[in-house]
Image 1: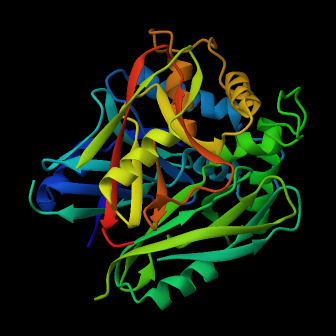
Image 2: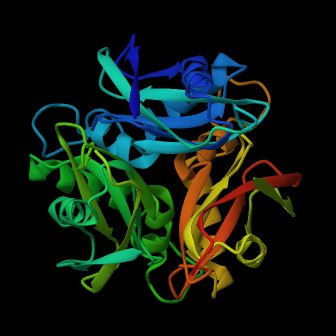
Length: 135
Length: 135
Length: 135
């Protein structure tokens, strides 16, 4: 079964830490060993795993993506959000995290971030947890 | 079992919408709930999920990737396609889409694109569908 | 069960071919048909699949990533490794490879590379192999 995490983004480009919501769904699932699939059903957003402790890392990711893919660069697409589509393809719309002993096997410094590239908006992440119940 | 989708690309850099071919394989599989894994076995191509409605989005992705990773930039690799290898690592060689009620759970605007970075060529995408038969 | 591959990187930015280690784990697992999940639990590293035959491809990937995300660019994060975090999000922290007849279904020219962006260091890759035992 697919579950959803709702995300309210606060700026045009924004990284939102959704780790605890995903951890909650893993606990609910009672899967001991398996894989957690995270999927973003939007074309101007993405998902990444990166450092969660220092918020300046998020800021640096956002600023650098803006430099690599500027908002205005003579794009053909007329909706003014081509940069957001391109960022989505660079960062990716899905990721996985392994599960063992009922817990996400994130590294010490890793958090899961929803990446908004054309907000602020109401968004969602589809979550599927597959595996066996025993730990 | 792994199935393959054959893709004929039409330019050196090209994004080809393969959504309907993948949907066909999901139907054939009769999997109701699961995961569809898409894997590109090439080193100068990739796969991405992005907007399918307006073809100008595809053009903007192609043009921006060309700006970020120019075709000629004094590369060491002598085959003249280093840019294509680099684009492959930025976009990625695999992706997943969740399946529910026997259908790919793509977002409203999402299509699946094979990304050619060193064409035109005959390419293929490996597709594996795992899950349970009941919807 | 999750297995780990240990990787010793030799430079600040480095691509290490870990294909044979992953192939070894697939053989050990005796899984005939399935999926191999590769996960990097670090925030300044990544994983990619690309050409393994010519080492100059690796060098071109490294040099181009350095151009796209320079080491020094007035980052907010004070540890001097913001570029490494950003590269990690561009390349990604996980990938999958399909398994058939007990073997990784890599393309002819594909190798699996651990991507170090803030080394040299001792790193590791988490590997999970799921599938059925029969080939």
